[in-house]
Image (tube, rainbow, N blue to C red):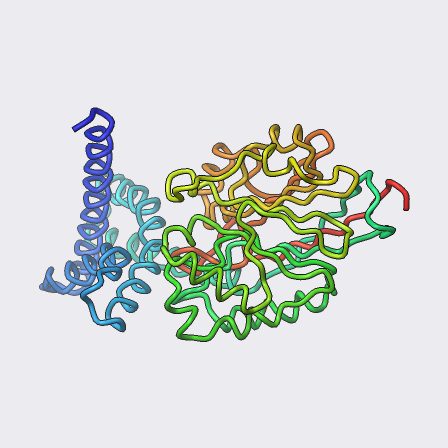
Length: 384
C-alpha cells in the first residue's frame, strides 16, 4: 500500500477515535448528572440511545436496513450533530465549574445538579433560537453595477438560492417558505447554486418535491448547478433528468444566454475533480467561447478561485456551500478556509457573492447564520 493510502487510513482512525472519545465524554457527563437526580439510573439506558445517535447518520445509510428505519436513524443522527457540538463546547466549562465549586467547599451533588441544569437550559436555548433561524428565511439584497450592455436592459433582478438540501429533514414545508418570497421579488432570472439535494434522491422523489420546486419561474428561466452533495448521493443522471423535466437545466460545464441578455455559466462542482471521470473544465476554458461584450454570470458551488475568475472575465460569481458555518462558532473556521465564506466581495471587476444557503445540513439549526434567499439587483452601465 502506498504511503498516501496509509496516511489516509491513519487519519480516519484518528478522527474516529477522537469522535468516539468525545462521545464517551458526553455520555459520562450525562450519566453523572442523571445519577445525581435519579440514583441508580441504569447506564445502559443512556449508552444505547447515545450510540444510536452518534452513529445514526452513518448507520442509517446501510442498504440492508428497512427504509423507514434507515431514515429514522439518519434524522436522529442529524439532530444529534448539533447537540453533540454544543455539548462538547459547554461540558468542559461545566466540569471546571463543578471542580472549582467543590474545591471551595460547595456540596458536590448540588453543584452537579445545578451546573447540569444550566447546561441543559443552554442547549435547549441554542436549539430553539437556531431552529427559528433555520426555518425563518430572510431575503438579503445586494446592489451591483456591471459596466456592460445587456441587450438593451438597464437592470436585472436575479434570485440566488443555494444549499436547499432537500431530503428527510428539509422538504416541502420549507419550499413553501421559498416560493412566495421568490415570487415577491419578481426576479428576471433564478439561479440554484448547488446542493439542491441533501444527498440521495429518494426523499425528493418520494415526497414529490419536484412539484414544488418546479413552481419557481422567471422570464429568463431557472438554472442550476451541481453541488458536492449531488455527487455524494450518486444519482446525478437521474437528478439532472428530473430537473430538466421541471424546466430547470442543470449546467455541467455548460452555458446559456437567456433572452440574449446575459450569459449564465454553470461549472461542475469541485467534487468532480475526484468523482467525475471527465473532471471539470478550468474557468478560462469554460468561458472561451463566450461573448465578452455581454455580462457573464458564473455559478460555482464552492467559493474558490476568485482571482482566476476575475482574470477570465467573469462579472458575477455566485456560490454557496459554506452555510457560513451554519452554527457558531463554525463560522470562525469557514472564514479562515475561504477568501469569502459569506456575503459580498469586489475583486477587480468581479462581483462575488456567497449565500449562507436556504436549507441546512444535519440538524435544522442555524446560529450566527440565517436561512436566506439572495436578491441581486444588477444595474448595467455600459450603454444600450
